[in-house]
Length: 422
Image (tube, rainbow, N blue to C red):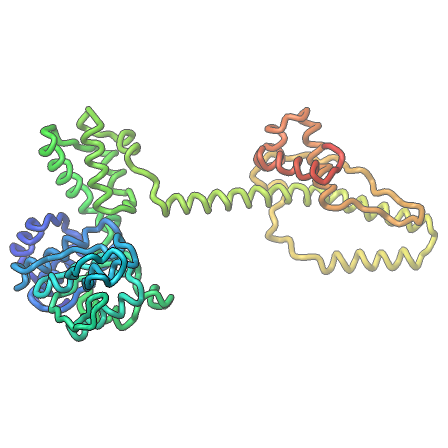
């Protein structure tokens, strides 16, 4: 929200009252907007990743409003079974469904003049969203199993950690409800973008935990502090608080070094995903390098095959046939792909591999050339590398530029095809 900035003293008082720690611009802006909108009756949508403290902002909005003496009800939409959310929000009549032994008020009726904080709003079904929209537009609703119109002037503050615009595109969230809820949007930045606030939060949590358990607060040395500030914190403030509490309880030494801190910093999911991708890329690269070895090693064999073909043609003493094949080879040389960007065998980041000559292709009775398939060449190539290393798979795999597991997989594939053992 625009307008005049909040007085620094008032801003600090609000932050202290509601336990908000930090000076990052995004955080201060979110607090200021919460203070400004609190004095209105506008609906508010709070967005931010899990663990960023969205509920604290809903409390600011309620307790600084004229509704502060009325009920403040918190409802996590994702924690309530789908079939019972309507009953929780709007109430039900006796006998409305199995188990409805008596009439019950819903939260909209209870929070009539107060504030209803709906956390994880994206978990609502489309049918419940339609009923919520009616309350926001006309301040009226029906109990489950009743046709009587009831009124509610409860203010709705909603929150979500998912991008609602994507849910709208996927037809999982009503666009009209989104605009009705987000009259005033408040976005809370994730902790990883608030590096200047991480140590402030750490010290606050360390002090609170020490006071709670009557112990000395933990501190971090320089390297540990640097690692903490560079951590991604997928669980945001909630995760940082848990980490501080764990270390405070489990560690006897109160000055924590980097190695000790590492034990309490799990790999973020995003980082794990990136590592998985990198691992796949590395595996693919190894396979490519392996094939490069075979293909570049075949260069001499291909030239040898050409020479052999010429010898066979000369045996037929057919100049026309020889000329036709010469033209064919020349045409293939002219049209072959550009290999300028393909690394030579010397450029490959591995040890040089000496490839022995493979057996010459045989001729059948009709003097037709029988050339080995690429798979047979690969098999022969592996066989000779294994012979060279006296069947030691680990050393052979290293020379081939593949993992030992990949080598076993290839050998198993040859075995499954009932080919001679290599």
